[in-house]
Image (tube, rainbow, N blue to C red):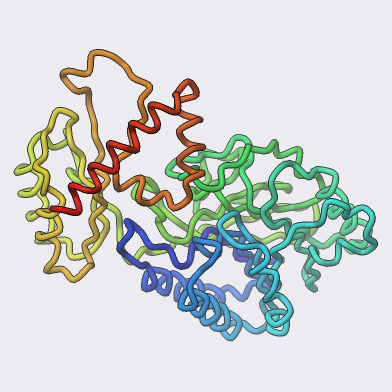
Length: 409
């Protein structure tokens, strides 16, 4: 059995409140389509977070439809299996499954009902049978479902008389995973022990964590071609760099399993990014003055005509109120190809910072990206468990005043 494993595509993402990434996703799908032709896998497995938000626009849905139709046409004999992630709407994913099944695409959005054990044959909605093997589908679920998952695996095992490979796919966090660069503000879930995911699969194809990795094989997670004994657990990683913190290569995983309980071969196919992320200065100490940063930015644009930019400043630096406008003025001639993140990285220690405080520190740009107020409340409670509501009110008052001043400028 041969599969291509990918995840966390985040179609429709608008980054830094201004920049759509449609062309970056098209560039990714062009590479994926080429691999589907060349490698001729039995299945393409997408382990959740197809979309960036639960109510994607019509244009984003069109990108989804056009892209997966093209993938089907590139390899008509290839099954396509997609499970919903925490960013996706389970009901929206599920509502389209009947039509897509005509093209050999299985969409699994809704998890099993709480009373699954009372429903005969419920397992059929979560199992994909291929001539080469089985795929067990787990859409995003909150909490551990060990008994339910084991029932699915046992259901397959009872049928699998020919010892065909068994792949299981899901969208969750397992204990021991490297979450470097991952934003947990949305979709925070408790890390599950791998043992809670049952026994009986050869390869567990996971999504949710954006760094590609094979659990238990940290030293060679990015090796181009490795073989391990079954079972193996792997995150394919995100398709494109979702933020500047994802400073590592992104890949899709080509997985080959010849028999149930045999070896698992994993090859990495490197995804080339249309735009890259840069933290300026690229090396050394952070900027100490606005003029220093602006001069360095102008020099950077001489040889770099596209990408995402973020600036590093020493905490002692004092920036003019119109600093961001100065940055945008420098980047304006590039027609949106050079994209600025106004959330500055502050490094070092302020000279007058002699006492600690529990007061929340969120920049305006960071708050503007928190579209759900519950995210702010959750994050604040986690970071500052002793914080009083009066302090939260004071913080919001300061933010409102800063937004008002920005509007005037």
